[in-house]
Image 1 (cartoon, helix red, strand yellow):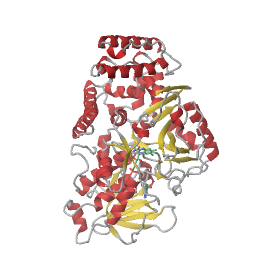
Image 2: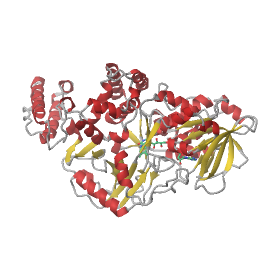
Image 3: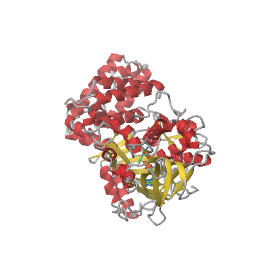
Length: 633
Ligand SMILES: Cc1cc2nc3c(=O)[nH]c(=O)nc-3n(C[C@H](O)[C@H](O)[C@H](O)COP(=O)(O)OP(=O)(O)OC[C@H]3O[C@@H](n4cnc5c(N)ncnc54)[C@H](O)[C@@H]3O)c2cc1C
């Protein structure tokens, strides 16, 4: 990354703060806007050759919470310490990577995420994920199949289910010549056999579930909280699911999603209150037994991905998540590493005349009225808090930052005193998250008996929580994301860090690079848990643990959740314009994943940036998204 610097006395047209996905996107879109596309940018250009846009980034690394770490032991497979990938339903990032920037980025399928859940190790029991819902296929599923297809389906099903429940009767033979009604009779008998043993069946799902909770996929149990609130929501969800399964991510899907979103805002829980008034897990706890509560959190890994956040926003996220993950829609990564998305955008930004100023932290943002028209004054200086601070003026500023970074910036008086802004900032809560990778000489997960694991991920109630089988190269050398940690497990692994986090949040951020860890102890603990979880011997790793924890400044967590009790769709447009000074038209804007309706996703960062660009700089909609796609409130 080259530093062109900005002279202390210089005034830029637009200052951008933060070189994560949101900041890089803002920079790219502004500098690549053509004359005549935006009256605001045309005015800013005036008689100059072009726009003067500078982006300040406190780190010497581009990407923020996208960081594709390359280890010499396996350089072919980048270790995504932050964001891993995206779905076609996320039109902005998908269009950017597959259309707009496709000459620089190679989009690849990511089987670790596309193939879904594999093994479960819960309460010392090891079983395949599909054992949660072992019921036979229903009549509807059998009807469209040919006799041969039915035979394959039922043989495969019985082979699986007989391990869980030996009492399931033998199939009528020859299977491909049986009438449909004979097969349905067999399915009913199989169902009764399973039901009879299910109260607590120690070889399979080790939870004492109540009647209606049995046989449900844990993720489905979570989703049912929302779908059971309203038959309209249920129908809308079924329609959009059917459209995706039949035709993929068509423009109609986005129209249907917008309608579903509007419906969710007015949907009420049985107490008559709208969803936004509740926390997700509070409502879930009133609906299910404590066993189902624990099972769903542990098995679906949802305690981290949803937290106890606003029921409206978590409903939307669960619906998106189901459509993205559970319905076989592919999940994509970038072969060169996901952090190349912001890197390429900034390369093009610089090629168009933009300035990237790395290693420079913005400490303060205020308004300066001493120049006639009010200017944004940014106090900028070395990221290590050393001497050399200066004030850079800008006509406009866009902050593309997470909550913690915004709170660290000591802001001008009018901002500090703005109670609405202060409470809006606190309307999202950071979620702790860390990742640990290991490199192995072979793809040992393929040896798990009876599982045939080719990719996907497994979850457990041990502190490793989620283990993703990331892939192998031709000689067998393989990458495992040994642990994607949630709120609880995060502190367990943080215990192996050698350097305690700085106590003074306003002081220097930790230096760039991986934190120092007690390597041998962490390896031993990871190996112990992985062996217990998978029930096989696992070879010693060639490299690792490669560990990063996003709780550090300036991130304060891996991603954010909207708090219960507020309407996020009202906060989002308000916080974007920040209201630094109510007396003038807005000059300082805020975007990023934190205050978006796709929290935990790059898409949230891009879409909030897009809305700033369209609303306040008059940029036209980008050509790489469907016309029906909604960037958010
Ligand atoms: C473990 C993990 C897994 C994830 N998985 C996925 C996934 O699979 N797919 C997906 O799409 N998303 C995923 N995400 C989320 C995704 O990484 C983020 O949503 C996205 O990268 C956030 O971008 P942003 O621009 O909002 O903020 P950030 O990336 O946080 O960027 C903010 C930037 O601002 C800089 N900065 C902060 N303060 C200052 C200051 N005062 N002055 C100058 N610079 C400053 C920071 O150094 C940083 O570079 C994941 C995140 C994590 C942590």
